[in-house]
Length: 137
Image (cartoon, rainbow, N blue to C red; front, side):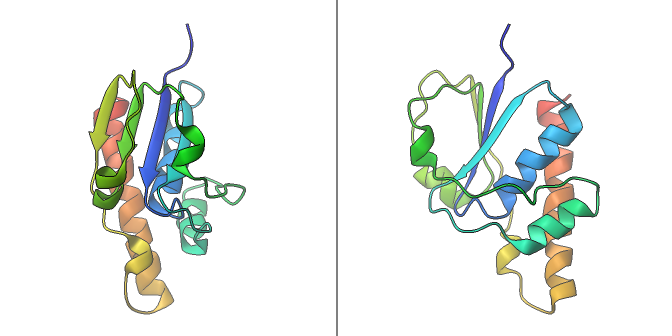
C-alpha cells in the first residue's frame, strides 16, 4: 500500500509550509510522503531554518517550489497553512482531505531578529501541535 501523500501550501513556500514539511517528516518518520509548495514561491527564510535547527530538524536543503508544478498529482491530504493560500489553492482531484490551518506569517513579524525568531518558534510549535492532534492522532 502506498504511503499517504501530504502537500503543505502557503503563499511563499519560504517559512510555514517548509516548517510543516520538516515537522511532519520528523514526527512521522517515513509514514508519509511529504511535500510543500507556494502559490507565489520565494526563497527559504533563514529564520525558518534556524527555528527548525533548534529542535533538531534540518530544512536547510529545502527550496521553494510552485504549486503549479504539482498540478495533476494526487494527494491524500492538502493542507494550507495560511488564509491567502487557501483562497488561491488550486483543486487537487482525488484529495482525500483538504485542511485549512491559518497561521500568522512569521516572516512579517516586526522587531529585532530575536523577536522575529520568537515568531518563527511560535509558528513552528503551533504547527507541531496541529500535526500531532489532527494528522498523527
